[in-house]
Each structure stands twice: as C-alpha cells, then as structure tokens.
Length: 320
Length: 266
Ligand SMILES: Nc1ncnc2c1ncn2[C@@H]1O[C@H](COP(=O)(O)OP(=O)(O)OP(=O)(O)O)[C@@H](O)[C@H]1O
Ligand SMILES: [Mg+2]
Image (cartoon, rainbow over all chains, first blue to last red; front, side, top):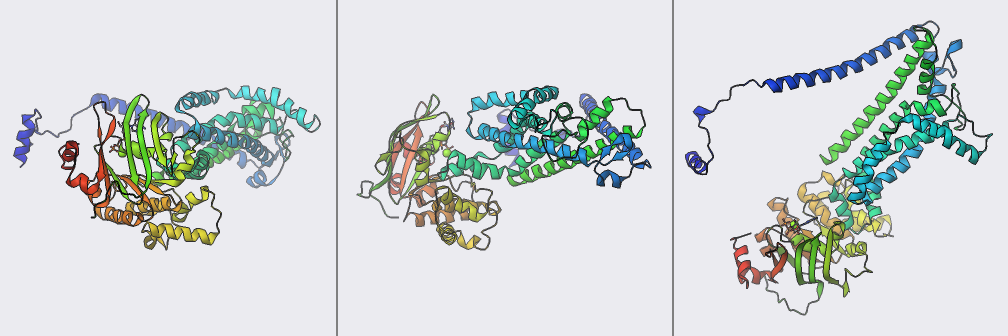
C-alpha cells in the first residue's frame, strides 16, 4: 500500500524520502538566532524602561507620603491642594480631571460612535478607504493646536452663548470640548474596528428577516459589538484622563474644587505640567508631590486599560 | 414519492422571468426563467459557481446588498415584479425569508432570536402573544422540545444542527410565504440533516421552499421539483433543465443533466 503510493508519487516527480534518508537532526540557523536575539533585546529594553518609570514614580511617591507633613489619609480625604502651605488634598485635581474627561467623552462618544456606525454600516468601500485614514491623520494633530483652538475659539463661543459673567476665560467646559474633538477620531476608529469585527453573516440574517440598515445597526451590530465598543470608550477615557496640553492651556491654572464646568480648575496633568515647568527645587515636597500625582494617574489609566483588555477578551470569546 | 405534473393548475408562488444577474461587468447568471410552485419544495442543483446562490438571493433581493450586483429581468411574486422601482426590498424580505448555509443565530437569547423578526416588523401583540409566537415558531422548526427549558440561554449555546433549526424558526416567526434555503445542511451531520429534511416536508404544507443543495441524495429524496444549473462557455450560469425531481433524476431530457446526476462531471 505505502509502496504503491510511493511509486505513484515518484512517477509524477515527487520524491518521498525513505526512512533511512530522513535527517531530523538540529541544524544551526545563524540569521534566525541573531534576529531573535535583537528582538529579544528590544522587548527587554521596553520592559525595563517601563519598569524604570514605575520605579521612579513609586520611589518619589514614597518620599512624598513618607514626609511627616503629609499622610495618605490627608491626600485622599481633604479637599484643598495648596502645596505652598502644605495642603495636599487631591480631590480638586481629581474632580477637575473627571469633569474635563466627562465633558470630553460626552462630545467624543456620541459623535465618534455615529461616525463609526456610518463608516461601518453605511459608507461604501470607497468612502471608507478615504475617511478612515483621514481620521487617523486628524488624531495626529499636535494637542497644543487643540489647546489654542479651545482658548481662541471654543471659549469665546461659550462666552457668547452663555454670557461673559457666567463663563470664565479659563474653564473646564472649553477644555473638555476640545478634548472631545481630539479624542473623537480615536473613538470613531476603534469603534469602527469593533463594529466591522461583527460577522457579516449576522447582518445578512437581520436583512433576511426584513430589517432596515438602521434596525440592523442598532439592534444587531451594536449589541454584538458592545464589549468592543465599551473597550474603545475606556481607551478614550484613559486618553482624556492623561491629556495634558489642552487642559494646561485652556482649563485654568490653580486647583479649584467646583462642579461648575464654566469655572476654571486645574486637572492632575495640568497641575503636574505647571509645577514641573516652574522653579521648584529638586527633592522638595512640591517636587515629590507631582510624582504622587503621577502615580495616581498611572494607577487610574492602568486600571482603565486592564478593564478594556478584559472586555475585548470577552468579545473575542463570543466569535472565537 | 408521487410524481407531480409541472403544468398543474396549482398556483405559482414566485417566478423568475429572464433573470440575468451581474457582478460588475461579469454576468454570473444568464436569462433564467422558472416558476416555483406553491407549497412545494424546489431544489437547485449544479456545479459550484454556476449561480445557484445568486439566483436564490435574487428571489428576496438579498443581492442588493452586494454593491456591484445588478439584475435584469423580473421576479414575479403575487403578480408584482419585485424589481419594479416602487418595491421596497425590506418589505420583500419580510415575505420571503432566508436560511443561510452557515447557521447564524444572533448572539442573543433563543427567545430574542425568534422575537427579533416580528419586533422589527412592527409587532403589536402582548407578551403572552409573543410567548405563543415563539413557541409556535420553535415547534414549527421541531426545536421546541430541545429548548423549551432554556429559552433565555444564548442561541450560540446550541449545537450546529439546533442552531440551524433556530434559524429556520426565526425565519418562520415573520410568517413568510416563501423560504429560501442556501445549502442549509452542508455543515450538519447526517442525523441533523435528516431532521431538517423531515422538517421541510412538514413546512411544505404552509410554505413554499426553495433549497440549494450539493447533495444529490438530498435533492432526490427531499424535493418535489429540481432545477439544474450549469455554466455556459462565458461562465454565466444558465438553467439547463427543470422538472419534477422524479423526472430529472430518472428520466433527464438533457444529456448534461444525466451526466451531472450520475456524477460524471461537476
Ligand atoms: N459577491 C460577489 N461578488 C462578485 N462575484 C460574485 C459574488 N458572489 C458570487 N459571485 C460570482 O458569481 C458566480 C456564481 O456564484 P454563486 O455563489 O451564485 O454560485 P453557486 O452556484 O451558489 O456556487 P456554490 O455551489 O459554490 O455555492 C461565481 O462565479 C462567483 O464567483
Ligand atoms: Mg452557493
């Protein structure tokens, strides 16, 4: 039987080695080994950098919290942040961060999602192939441009609409809106990925039952992509939380505990940027305080990223 | 199986007249005309790429979803040309349902899978009536006994054969007149296949079924009429022969049909 097959294979020019000729011993692959080593070093290097950053964050934050003038309890439970007089209650910075991010997401999610639905469910391949790269270019505009856009355009607009007395020159609303515009392409692009990952067969099933495009998009595609979309939103949020330039320029300089979006207030990132730009002495408590803030920021975004990874993993499970 | 007279006075459910279907410049189907009899099972057979699925999809305008697709000719359903400019393809698909080759339940509960069609079609009934419709549809697809205790579980938790019956039940829930099935059993084991075939015989009393199949045994045992398609020299699909399944399989008029069903090419 095997002999026959061999004879047939050989007759059509395929040679099958007999057992005696098969050589399975290891052979050195020099090029392969070098490439592998280089890639390994690159990987290790990036891990070391990250570890280094985290190490410095923890070390300096440790010095900060170890200072007799501050305590972790004070950090998390008091409401005034005035480093000059030794008040380190983080909440004004956190609420401002939360407020600008919230406003940003209120802008970015609806418009970004709408754009994604249009691109994935309505646009022709040609439109999509033009618009998607365009979105990605938009995402590459330097954030300082958005900062001045907020100051020079959005703030005057808000002051025109709501009145000069209501809207501060520096305010969270303006920075939040600019941030939303900044994040919109990211949300649109990631959401579009999530929507297009929904198998075409589900859309066909829906169309086959007499659903319109809108019904299919809203009732089949969106729910099927839900976890991917939520992951996209979370990535957007962590981008917003970490965004610095816009808030530094447009939201105001000086911590302020307020729920009014038209007030000026300073976010965690804005504060870090301002303090590190000023003349503080190395090793002072003001200096270490910004590392404590950096650590807090790191923990927040890390948590958000872990959450979004979890959600994406669950999304994959559903469709293998 | 009884022999059916193709010219019987029985009404036609749907009829293709000179249908040609193009994908871009490529003519995939050339001038196909055939009338599908009501409450019968009609099988489309033929080698791969001869346009069976394309013809099938033209019956409920699913081809409209392919951006490059274009049609010439008419599909007549209840005296109306489905390709007339004033016809809404969404309305067409509500009356002419479809079951796909690969079972494609929504990632929703079994109950919601069934309820989806009626809901988007403006369902106005009560919860109890919906419960009843869901049960009726699942019974219609011979799936009720398998799933009656787990209606809230995901449709994706079912076996392949059960998923395909769920898709049939889902199609039944919108109460279509015609059901198009594109190789519904090709991913199923023989027992699930037989179940679906038995189901088709039952459904025939109330629905008209058109099924595309590569399985000659299936066509011969599970259909009343058979249409045989083949590509012409320009690779466009044409209808070669159409008649009762009995006649096509035992007394084909065209030599090519005879060759195909006896497995000599294709
Ligand atoms: N969406 C499409 N775009 C372009 N060409 C298509 C498309 N769908 C089908 N075709 C072409 O049309 C012809 C007929 O295809 P169709 O799928 O109808 O064949 P079929 O008889 O169903 O084949 P099979 O038995 O393999 O399913 C083929 O040449 C195919 O390549
Ligand atoms: Mg096909």
